[in-house]
Length: 199
Image 1 (cartoon, rainbow, N blue to C red):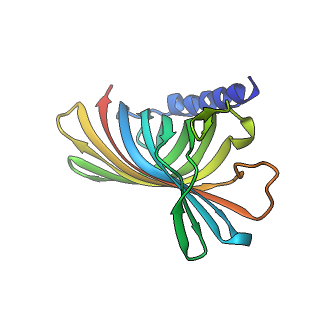
Image 2 (tube, helix red, strand yellow; image 1 turned 90 degrees about the vertical axis):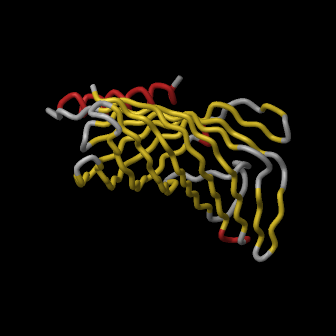
């Protein structure tokens, strides 16, 4: 319940900021994406990479963008230990990500290109190890710093194609094993394509 309250408060505060803006161009839409979640442990030179599928929605108020995305990691986890690479155990998660981005758009007529920065709260929903569901764990919920680059491409006056690339740095990286030692870092990236509708 606590983590749901954190996520709700996060989005309510961001929504209030959107409503406070007097912005004529308000877009509401959805997007799909592909990316990776990357975790590194520097003491033993271990890198864990998981491919990720995303499906979500967004509200864009020109200078502020709110997003909610369902994410699911796929396939076997790839491990790299020093110079040796292999596919290890199947470790999968599903998450619900709540993001807020401040944006700086540049208008080129029918195309707006924007750069943005913000924060994301990643709420773990399920965790699966080798096909066994081990439930959800609040200790692997994470906060990310985000940097993004995207475009809003007008198809008509009311319909826009919205590609975006996002990079994230994990502020609260946690290993799969909470008792594991070492210095952990976490990153993520996504490439997404969406459709937005002006309201």
